Image (tube, rainbow, N blue to C red; front, side):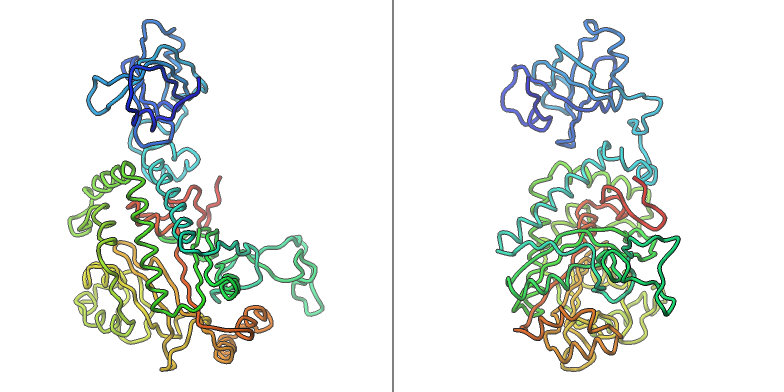
Length: 477
């Protein structure tokens, strides 16, 4: 008999027919009630065992984590909290789970403990819910861009370019580390390396994406990116996924419109498709917040926060205006900020971004026209000569979620900026070609996918929204 997913059994419209379900035991109570889950839903289905007609040896093997197959009648449940149950006529143990050794026992585990067991944590309610939401959000990304006629482009993971100019890259080499070949100058001879040059894992697909946008009009990338940034924080990963659209003929205003529309679409999609998971994650967050001091608790529940983003237009504010607001703010005057804002040109920190969103404007904020000195070389220089057409989108509870800009389409201005920053023109000859041949106004942005998942699930540590987090000192699994 073909097995039916638990999700489908729980939404069935007919009862009193024979069904088969397969899954993992969450709990087994009174030698009679199995809570069975197969990952298709946050909800378990209760399977009622006739223990008098099942060998005692088999009953002993029904432990948390064991894989089982049950066949029986789908019936309306007499117990509270569930609509249906399976009255079991046949039970088969597919895979045993030693209760003395299985770490995911039905009790509260710390998130740190679960990170140490990342290969098993997805069997908990919390991580099952997070990963289903992540999957749905991933599909929503493709759905949005495909509906809008964007072309999906796979940009290289191994590259010789540093799109951000920050130099925090993982090097890729096939050279023997113990005996590196040297050239006449005594430096490593990369001509003998696999690619014949110095290469690294990509920090962004943007530069390659731009070249495709200048032929296909509108493209997006969605793939893994890598930063060798030694940031051991709750907001940083060494390996994460980036969504990067690039659009020819879009200026900064059109870029902001696209980013706002995109974010609202994917959040609404997840809310429509994952109501049970989000409801569970909301109650989990409420429970977690009870242990915090009142001042640190969120003013909104998870679903209120998501609806807040859907129902409010994003406030557009220039960097200069934001600096004035922050400089005159109470936490700045009372030196409550860790980084005090004294002058124009300061690089905004998460605390400043969150103040603007959560305290001052009380809605999502798009900051634009940043100082050129704190932004990347490819951003279009404004007429004032000191700011660039950059934009960041700031969200409650998270700070920056999107960074983007109108790209510098003028060949001579781009070359001049590269010279000032010491970026080798020869290394990026192909990128400069897009300004030599048919250059046009174009814009794009990058959204760290895990930060989006973090916001939608209400989790507070980015390590909990990716299956196997890669962080400084940790490449387990």
